[in-house]
Image (cartoon, helix red, strand yellow):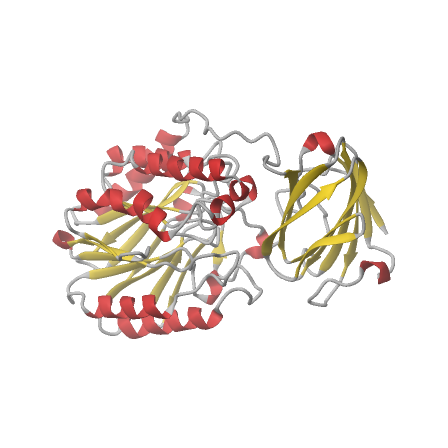
Length: 483
């Protein structure tokens, strides 16, 4: 048996627990059992000797450095000292399965990747906390927040830090623009940056959108595109209306730094902010889509009550169709779904598009198999994915479809399937080496030292696409393909 006693913030496969620090200054113990192949949590009292044990101070981030990052069990135990009888709320997130126990009473049990809330009144004194976890395959995550009812789990503020342009921005922007100008030559292009997976739930990284918007003075974008996951159903943003609203207005303010049309489609982490009371399709339209109507001069076409829509640049024979790949109510219902009504809308719109127009399709989630970085089937609707790929392949036969461009996976990918281009932009999200799918790759970077944004350039007259990486990876992460 191996024993670990380090407490570190991991850069890979993180098992994390977070709480109100003043009530949990004591030791956290954990046990690990490797090689567990079943799909559901066991009765931990029946398990034999653990593979490894460890301890840490203050219920903070713990890393287990197992050779294999899948198929293992973990059990964390600690003590919560309550100074007076109080009602507590517990928020648990896990990927995959978890069980949370207080003084022998199971408050939460989940058999899949999900969030769950539970409340309990605790008497003055010490209380035993037990958190049990099963990692099956793919992504890993375990977050426990607990807090007095009506308070935030930590001393999080609701004001974003003051905006400033870091020194690294201008050199990285101009270096990528030089590559673009060399490729462009005298050809007419449609050019726009894709920004995705900001995950601004704790550190307000939406300022990076402002950096890219400021760069429009150099690039002269035709429009800007945000592919979702601004991050309002994660951590404290999920349980705090104030933090959710700060993120929403912060993203909106950064978008407004761009004088042109800013396009947006939602991601799976854009719903359920403030415990599901703050975000909706109508709210997204008001904040992120309707502000572009006047600037678009009649070329931005919103769908009433929905977040899927399209935008035309008729003088360049270009149309971008923006789909909602994530449904609504992601924590209560299935997500990563292209519903029937939207698919029919999409097919009719493409079939009504003039033949001479180039059509780019964009959404948050990538239905191509190599883009699905989550390996477990639920709650992802794989039938919906395959249907969308079939629809794109059929429409491509008679229409000038550039391809489907997405975010979500936190890595880069370009694949061609039945003559359809599938492209994933990396964005700012976290990803381990184990989560990279075949044909994908990722540029390492530090958000405090580098941008990470792909600018997409299309030559409609020649049917050519070139992507230009601003920041992380530089020219090594440029892609070029035809349609």
